[in-house]
Image (cartoon, rainbow, N blue to C red; front, side, top):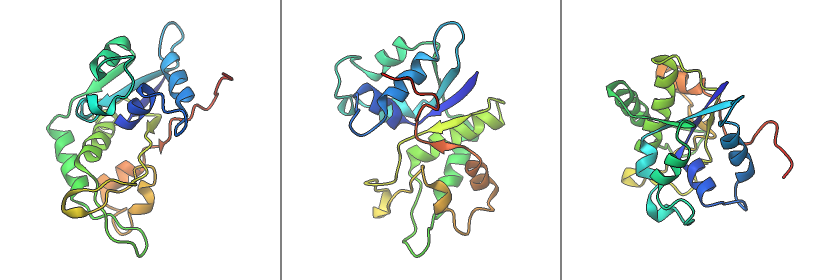
Length: 188
């Protein structure tokens, strides 16, 4: 069985059935393949998703609230709460100044830092190998404190000029951060 780690925006895309912008069919297939006998996948996420998948972001009425969605997928999705090690790592990642070429330096938002740190700690501390870290985070439109733009998680490696040797940044670089496109997508 393969372990997936989902960013909050994957849940939002699925719940809102945002087919025009995202491959929601792949997300649905991952969820289906997490259930019943012969499970192929298990999904992990940070409890930070409880703060990011807010009622205001849920346009669909199918699930009511995010907790209702999680209840429907009990045993399929495990939320991991940040412990002191996760928070310490998140602070370290957030404190870095990310740069790509001649562009202005960017930051990692606190939410992204906690979510990424959770995935790293899940592997390193709890020995849960993460096959893919799924996200749609392309860094567009995110503004951090002091007006600094947030980095793209999908393009994280491109934003690590000069800091790629930092052991914590290097550890994040080892994650397979990608969009949730199913490798064996069924015809719908």
